[in-house]
Image 1 (spheres, rainbow, N blue to C red):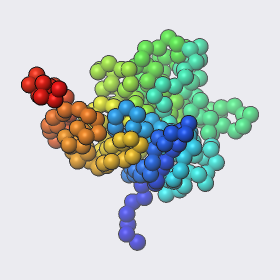
Image 2: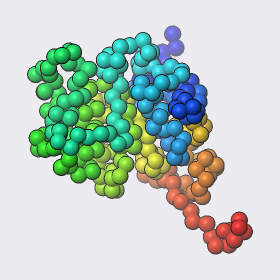
Image 3: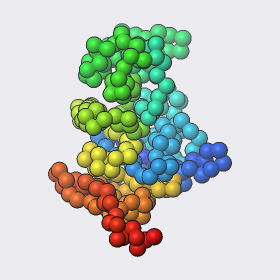
Image 4: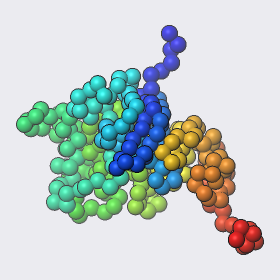
Length: 271
């Protein structure tokens, strides 16, 4: 035996076709237990579709494994106990309370036609407390700010108590302060509960600051993978994002990506 640790989540040769268009082709990724993996790439690269494919929400080719088990061999309720997914823009019923929405995360544990148990209620209350949402438990979702809504979506996913957490753009539409709060919260929960986190993030510097590893998607294919310093290389970013960038070492040596405005002279030469 090699002694190599089994990945917490692994995708092998994932392909997705939607509406006759090839969105993903032969994508492979792997995240170790307790690791934070960020999927980056330009708009339309297939990042959100990749997370939905791993979560089993769109038809796909290829294989997805959690802790070495092929999820296609599992019933949906069992799969939901292994993978929790928080979409980028979920439908939040405005009249539903924060508590009732979070409690939906216990669905995989509640018998068909049954009702929640004392354990389900305890887990839900505990998660809301950890996310500083216990004071909002009875508040309708339609009365929340953007940052509060993001925390509620995260709460529902955490209430599932799955070892793998998929987050699609968890900082979308948030200001800088709330972006930092959400990402710090995810990181604290990851470390405390030994979660494996896979996120899509459009902000490359944020991805580098929080993730242990990156996967760069472009035109539906994984074109680079590895530590942030390797993936966030200026030639790769210039080629796949079509942007002028400068990459510098930031906190703890993690890369920071700066946009570089072209000079008037260079713009004239290109024209």
